[in-house]
Amino acid sequence: TRSTRPQRMLKAVQKNATKGNPQSVISAIDYFCKNSEWAMNVGDEKGSILDSVVTEVNPSTVLELGTYCGYSTVRIARLLSPGTKLITLEFNPAYAAVARQIIAYAGLQDKVTLVEGSSGEWIPQIKERFGITTFDFIFLDHWKDQYLPDIKLFEECGLLRKGSVLLADNVICPGAPDYLEYVRNSPRYESRYYPAHLEYTKLEDGLEKSVFLG
Ligand SMILES: CNc1ncnc2c1ncn2[C@@H]1O[C@H](/C=C/CNC(=O)c2cc(-c3ccc(F)cc3)cc(O)c2O)[C@@H](O)[C@H]1O
Ligand SMILES: [Mg+2]
Image (cartoon, rainbow, N blue to C red; front, side, top):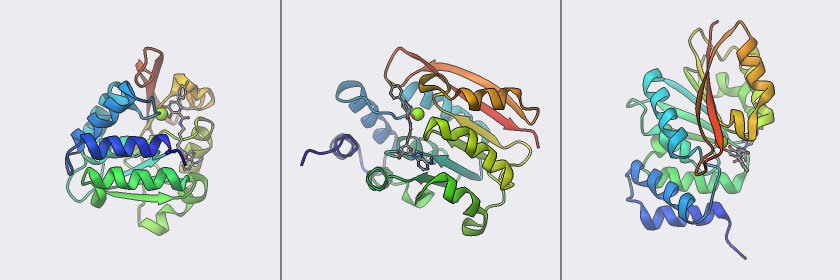
């Protein structure tokens, strides 16, 4: 049967990137998406903003919602301090399988815990299962209508502390209007919009960074 787009993306990484070199994996995926097939990775423009926020926060505890093929997982993990690991949640087994291979090809498997399951099911279990009290940095890039329910779940589960940083992809395209309204109007968050473009296109999109105020 015909291969899937994530499988073709993985082949492009194995063909064009250098094993153990995260930057070459990032470049190979961006090249594939610009020249062969568009895919919903955060991309290079928004990815550079993601890099700068991760570097600024220098987090000890990191969570990503929506691994997909692992592009942003690789971008984040390559910047973490030695000994720091990130948890990424992905409920589609086929995507998770590709992501594991792309993360491993980058040589970052020891810095990543990929959990196959849904955020709604797993967020309430993180404290006990991973011995984490709060997250320093959270990247939201899963179903856009799940951003708001999941940020509320973070609050309910006590997973945020004063200064926790949440960064959300696609707040314009496809958009997460209810999430934006919440973080921009809640007294518990200090929010800022980073304008950019939808990955690999000229369409407007951007990232919303929200700092929990406690
Ligand atoms: C709800 N809880 C969840 N828990 C764990 N994993 C979850 C998940 N929801 C979704 N996922 C996974 O995240 C990924 C979903 C991401 C959804 N992203 C988008 O829809 C998206 C879509 C676009 C897009 C923009 C314009 C356009 F014309 C077409 C697409 C661009 C993006 O950057 C996007 O992130 C998948 O791998 C899915 O299996
Ligand atoms: Mg996205």
